[in-house]
Image 1 (spheres, one colour):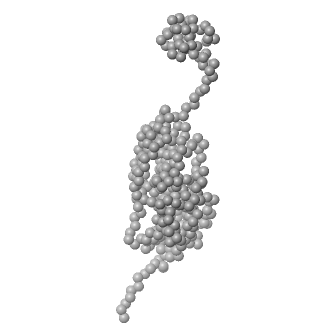
Image 2: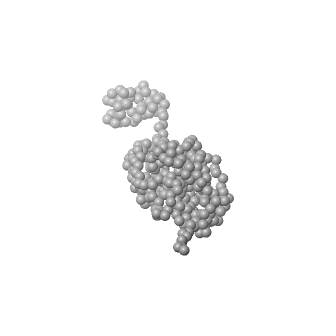
Image 3: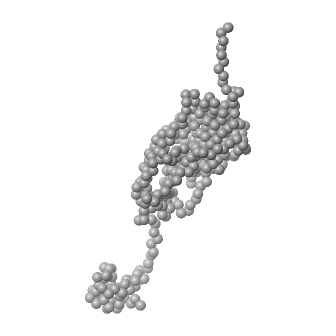
Length: 195
Length: 127
């Protein structure tokens, strides 16, 4: 569930700094404790990958970037993203009280869990989330496999055998169940017949 | 860029959702205003509430989660959920003139300094 880690304290490289900042500006920040941990990684930007029967959906959290500056490319099994989150412009008279948001340039290469058809990829950027829909390559699509019972399949083989006029068209599996194909008409005998 | 101006901002303080995340914020103070910038990815302007009540600024954003039963999550690095965070605004800022905007999942709140409380340089004259 998405909220599984919600009430964990924040760890990681900036954990101590975070607490110090919160203590320093306790007067400004009303609720410095009890915050959830949204991110399960320290890599930026964080990525979620979902699978549907015919496609992959990659969601990338990138608040506050200009989508025109993003470089997104896809190969059969790799998605890569490059971009920059610009720092906030500030002059010498501005005092920074709290800085929790990150900025700078980033790049990520994501190995996809299934081969995709990159020509049909679609990407949209809304509310700070980049969503990339990647249709799977035809061979990676989920297919339903019909299951035949064994007795039925024998009859099917026999029908094909009786219909074929030339021995050259007979698949090898057929040959195992019939006489050598010198005389095609005689093979109906003993196999239950096609009709 | 969507603006959420005065009237809406002066409404009732929204209650925190049952479970929520604190958005990451930057807080900066310039001579003329206080700026609070919060990352709230996934929040659209209709789902965002910015209120000031009794000098407490509240940011509240709801994230609608689409549940697709045909969809299976293979890899997860971030969680989705509502955002909520409050700040006490010092008295020298004019809470009645708050201006908020939302752009690409980033909320920017600007609160101008109350001119009456602005520090002034006092000339010291020699006797």
